[in-house]
Length: 247
Image (cartoon, rainbow, N blue to C red; front, side, top):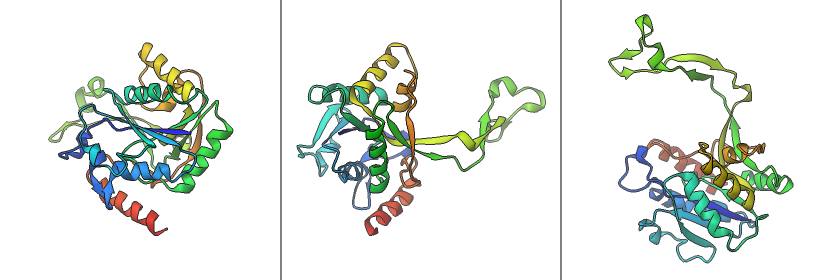
């Protein structure tokens, strides 16, 4: 089994002077925590990290000289970065090898959660599997405000144009996708290529597989496997990381 970490993004919402994957947290960068979490699972033999060609921060990573880590050029989108990494991996590994794609900014990955995910992926390789958590909050579907902002329906305030609820969704069957997402190397590569050729919008690897008619399996994840997106997330992720170390 191998892993891919798309890490070519710049994380604009963090408002930091460097890409968010290189922010320090609990004694290491988010990216190094993420790599370490994946290598805690002995089944993962190698990790391909997709970076911007002009990325100079990775040179300071504790894993920069590791034979088990290979840097590849990332693309303009997440799917392009993953596809580049998969193409490089296919020069060494067979189509049937499982690949776990994991976000660089999800540094907290409990070993038992990753272990269960990989167990399921090995049992159902044709479908693949991904971590996900059920929605707890009430979910609102937002209307097209441009169509509704007439007469008394206007939502323009001193804060600007605010969203309007169209309807409330049944949260019973709604889950939030996390990573890693695990599929066979050849299957995922073909799915991403086809999605690109047909202009299918891909937000994660599972959506590329779904576009081919595959129904991936959801494995219950953890709130700890959160994605660092906003500045206030750093304090919480540091707490989670320290909790894992204490455990």
